Image 1 (tube, rainbow, N blue to C red):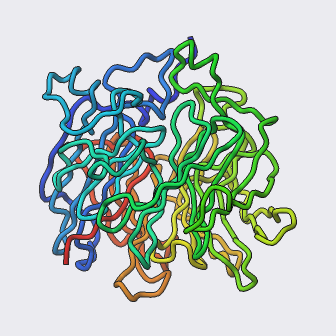
Image 2 (spheres, one colour):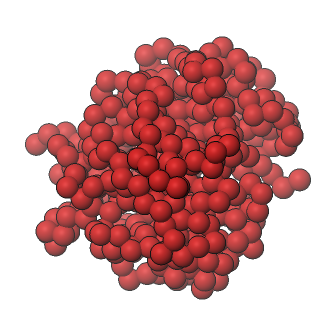
Length: 446
């Protein structure tokens, strides 16, 4: 049998939770960084190598707390679901549960803060899981009964209103839900947008006036689902590909759809409206997904592309911004839905190696690269501004890393304006952090 990539090396799960205090650091941790750098990924408790897919592992959250120029603690905790508590003999998870939840309620893809709570989240219909400040599972939540279905791994926070905007789908559902969660943590708006099939919808984007929907040709394979395939989605180019502009206070009948060349997008970098009212969205574009191998991550190089969409008519303008294979694009989230100049990403090398970090200057069409040698591999970069009113590039880029020589992980802190230079600080963790998906910087309450 072919070895399952996602159960080997630093993709492999770790057996136990860990806690460590007063972590050793090389260099100087900026004293103004006061908060937690959290990330999450799959950490399956009992995977079947023949059928395991990376997207379906039980969640584990990792966190480093920075305070007063020191690394106060590192913690890793399972995000408890029905499978985890059964395997570990732990008490059931409190809170509501959906009958159609995946994997007993797994939450393994992103971890965010909203309305004073820390939430582990995933796509596909599962509910968010609320975590304590120390990353212990507290309960599942449906936002006080206001969430009609599941949630998503990638809500977009409007920096002006504090609201979360989300594209929600469920296995088998022939609709995409537009869900708006208010700054108070309650859903204030839900719009059901019908689509022709049951597509996988990983992410979304917002601009000043629009919510951006992705209806792309990775769709439910019902025969595979009936056979019990864990991730029953497949590349179906005849389904077509389109992007939709839904006015943020509009309804399903107001969506402006535009056709695209068949592709798949896990992650937009950002979107905004230009001076002529056109919607510009920068995306990491895969030419296809799940076409040759269901249990791999993608087919063909993921490149940084730009789509320009005129709501008044005409085809989408599709152009290439950077050819290098890359994923996990991030930017200064004070600019969500607004014009941006800079973006950050992980460069992907041969053998699905996360070999370097990239910083794109989209105005100057220039890219810098941060590389620490063949043994050092990187996870998603997170930009943290130096101060609330600092410039777009004035701050730090933080990332978890993995060192193949030591089989341990670090957190690196880079000066954003000196991106290719050695880190200003490296925080040494006592264990390795498996490759996972997403995370965020959550500042301490002021």
